[in-house]
Image 1: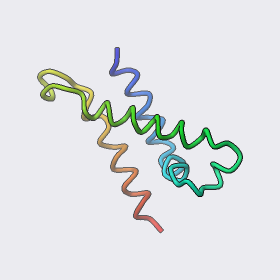
Image 2: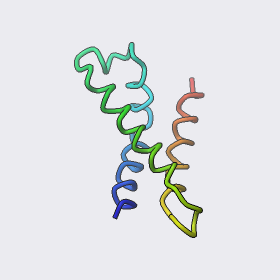
Image 3: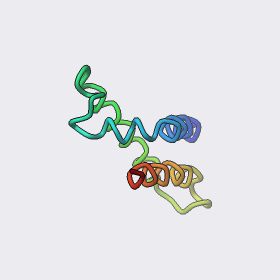
Image 4: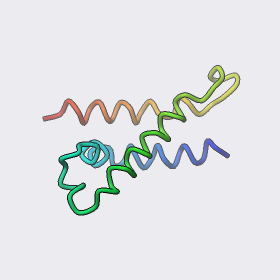
Length: 82
């Protein structure tokens, strides 16, 4: 069940990786109108971190920690693009 929810958060973050990166910046224009935007994005990142840190050995004890790899990669790509 948790895997389904983690999958939803992973898809959201991956599809909107540029927006997630932009909103994490405190000076972003996305935060001027609603400062809660940054708090929401940081909560999303926290959820992704918890998914990545799922206890157990993959794939024996758990099978969800690896689904976040694509999100972290998309964040890195967005950060290094001009």
